[in-house]
Amino acid sequence: MGKLLICVGLALLLHVQLGSSYILSCYFTNWGQYRHGAGKYMPTDIDPCLCDHIIYAFATMDNNMIKTFEWNDVTLYGQVQALKNHNSNLKTLLALGGWNFGTAKFTTMAGSAANRKTFIDSVIKFLRGYEFDGLDIDWEYPIGPTKETFTTLCQELVAAFEAEAKTTGRPRLMLTAAVGAGQGTIDPGYQVPQLGAVLDYFHVMTYDFHGSWNRQVGENSPLYKGPADIAAWQQQFNVDWAMNYWKSQGAPAEKLLVGFATYGHSFVLTTSATAVGAPDGGGAPAGPYTRQNGVLAYYEICDFLKQGGTEAWDAPQDVPYAYNSKTWVGYDNVRSFGIKVDWLKQSGFGGGFVWTLDMDDFSGTFCGQGKYPLIGALKTGLHGAGAACTPRAQPLAPVTQAPPPPGAGPCWGKTSGLFPDPKSKNKYFQCNGGQTVTQTCPPSLVFDNTCKCCNWA
Image (cartoon, rainbow, N blue to C red):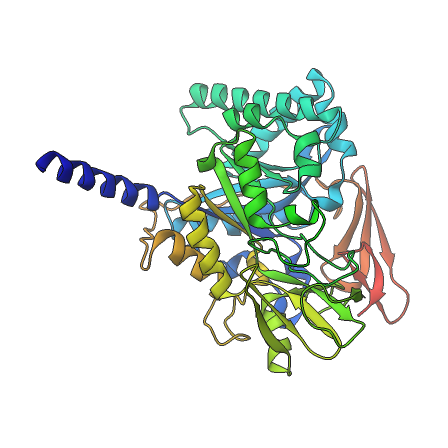
């Protein structure tokens, strides 16, 4: 009996230790700064004790070398790194890629050993120079011939990170990847066991399962399949299927992080039907802050409910939805986040990640649930109430950049492309090889950095 009690005690202790090791990663987007009014989001809005990892999205790449993307990325890098002074355990990673980045530059870079070495050398120098703790690769998606080269790239990155750490005595840089959630991207895109041996974490993008591209309304991130999911491929579009499929293909469960979305997909209703699976007429009009058709931030959904929207619970899929006479939106709330956290723990996964910080009610002014109600609930579920957050004993030195050479213009140090003029809303810079051409939008229009075009204010 005594031995049994000891075994039970050790099992409980192990459970507590494992429970305290869940990871919560949160993506910061460098375009949140361009939202107006209460939607504007800066690194100074981040609660430094909220997440274990902050992932800065996105960097870009030119000539097989990692580069900044926004005109003020270096300043924002410094503000993000300063959060470590308030949370000594905080790790920061830099994400490269994203949906708009495409695949061409990744394919070229990963396609030869020489290009990969150029890239890897630039990554180490860049991450160390700006005090990041790792790299998050968001290649959407390495399908087909690039499947093997993606694996090789990750293997060579980790080998180089380990060699650099051994030489410098610094902790090894981390390597994570944002990966697809559907079988149509997993099977042709990833050598799962090989990646599982080198990646620190997989950020499985378990959201965007349904959106305005469908012919019927559906949930953004359902936990389980629903009655409207008839076809075999439709039955895969849920968190439970995606995460368990990754695990079945050889990914270590403790390295799999579940994606939690702080936004919903909205639709135009074409009939009086409001249940999941009702006909839709495309994406609903953009929200006042995020300004993207078919997408609403959680705080915009709270406004939608205040303005007469009806909230309903999708019991089969364990997520809510809301509607009025013309608009339908599928999303997550505090309740569904809690259910997913319980499921995550029971399934043995390594934790969760959030896309994104800026679409939760970060100011606490919209939903009446305090600041960061969704991510706060996720943190409490993963780490427990009152999780410790210890300031650094020795503050970090500020992140700086070498001064520009004499006569350098606004495009110095930037990749080629279009960039906003911080001093004038209707002007922008056209950068080409470091050279600057100042352009002006037509009257009544302003430069919109989300589309890199002149747009109505």
